[in-house]
Length: 369
Ligand code: GLY
View 1: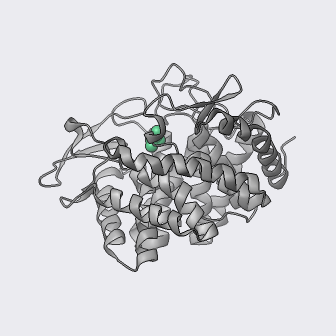
View 2 (view 1 turned 45 degrees about the horizontal axis):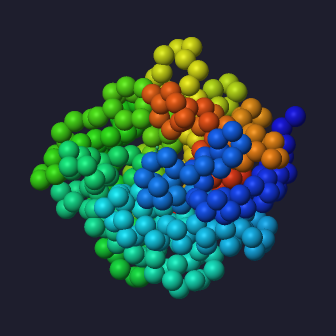
């Protein structure tokens, strides 16, 4: 029998209260749970894009429970992430994910001055990636100078925040230019979005689409769809351009049409029939984005889709084993990842499941705002 949302949230918080100390003892920011134990990112250490989700989880639990342990654990990870400002050349457009959910959440929830300074520092790093040809550069490799990716719609949130906190519109104006380019170049006629578009770094003109973490060129990587859905909803919340809301609704309608009977989400909506490749992170992100849409439009249908997604996750893919770390299973980093990144636990899946539940329970601290 499915749990009610409040009960599920409390059980998850308890599970993390029992298991998070192991991360502190190991001195790591958890990336995923492997064989029930937290492990750190196998990629660029603490410069990897996912580092903010652990402190983000801790802040969500702090808001839920008021337990000081979670604040301390969030701050331990925050200190490790701000130390990464020194690795500058490894950082990329994902400084939004990394720092909005760590120092950004800290400043928002506690008013800590240093955390606010660090948030503005991160926003300035993202600004530094802006190419006046019309887009924010995603990654650092020399052959990817013109690459923009759909995920960046979420990173723009740190720019809205910086404009609000400083009274300087240049951050939000930059976000607007990037969002307009994304609207023009990524959104397809069927309501799906591309993952990667290469633009000419001199003129901003489209060069080509590239295959990304989905099944193939031109297909619908479900997590990319979720980033677009939620990212455009947040763009509308902050910039009030009705075209952003329309884009979010179109992406959401396409996503809703692809939710599986069991409420889970395929890794790519165009994957071969009969292929069992699930990415529950996509479903958890979409559940957050759809609730954002419900709030922005007053249309409860979006909330019902969000509930179907969350119910599916809780019923089929929540690991309630008290001693095992992590909660959400069947998370998939990338469609063609047949190794450690397929059908596993990954902390950003846990983060978005918890955020979706916080929203359903009316307790969301709105860390993206
Ligand atoms: N932002 C990278 C990913 O979703 O995997």
